[in-house]
Length: 130
Image (cartoon, rainbow, N blue to C red; front, side):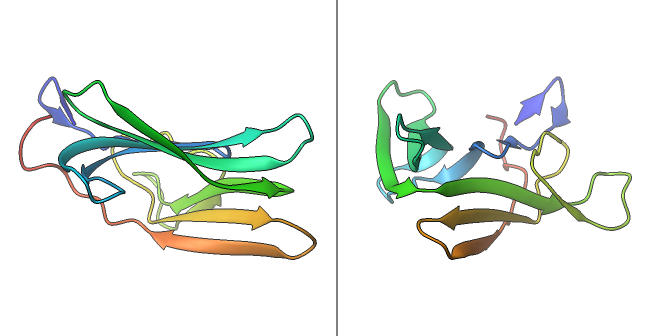
């Protein structure tokens, strides 16, 4: 994104939610500027579910889907460096709009065994302002 001539990365996240801008639909349907959101919701029984939502810029339609549910634990964390840091570190929140994290980790547990999925992030500035 470009605000007042300054290029910024739109990537925000905390332990329960993640939002970023992509050039592609996560369902492969639309190409263009897409706002993608993942969110964790806790049910009345305390179980957690992961949802994905996307909306193409300039369109009002949103697609929202439950990816999985009945989790005892489900959270995001982020690995990367702040502009002033030499070494990266894991954190539960990412709010830096100058740089995207290097990796996102999804940690989940349905029964006793905890699993982790690491996703590398390849972010760059858009070739045109959004």
